Image 1 (cartoon, rainbow, N blue to C red):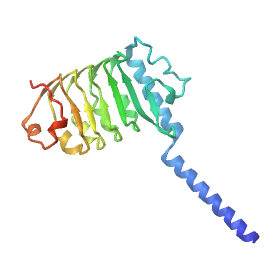
Image 2 (cartoon, rainbow, N blue to C red; image 1 turned 45 degrees about the vertical axis):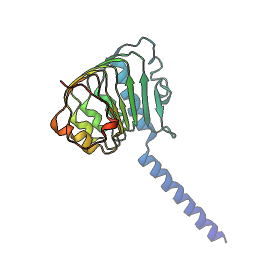
Image 3 (cartoon, helix red, strand yellow; image 1 turned 90 degrees about the horizontal axis):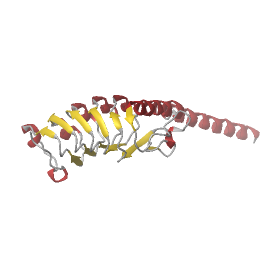
Image 4 (cartoon, rainbow, N blue to C red; image 1 turned 30 degrees about the horizontal axis):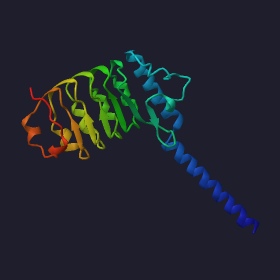
Length: 208
């Protein structure tokens, strides 16, 4: 009886150790959240004007999951949502937001961000919604966005985006459902016009 009790205790201890290792291996909360926090603080440094003090609590002393506009997953292992709408922030849209590799939604809408849509956003493999409407972004939509396998929503209306749209975006992003490219300066190339996708869910965009 004592032997069975000892064996059961050792087995239970092994199971707990295995589970703990698995959690640490796949979800390193300290390192991941520190990486996310560093990326967000770098983004704050690029903001030159914050009229509503939206980012006032983006500080080293504050837990990143409590930053305004930031939401983490249920177990707070990664930042999953960055939602900043109608905040009128002025500054650069920086490539190091691509370090938020657990991000599912990135919405920075109706601000005054400038620069290009960073090609590095292709690192956001879990991203489902990218909304950058109503900013001052220029350049083209990077071909690398076609490497986002979970992308469902793409809104970049009301910017100064030009060039042509890569047909690979619609060919590779098989979950893409809603696209709004209106009020830009995009050219419609023949390959895109003949690419099969549900046109009823793609908002009209300007032809140059």
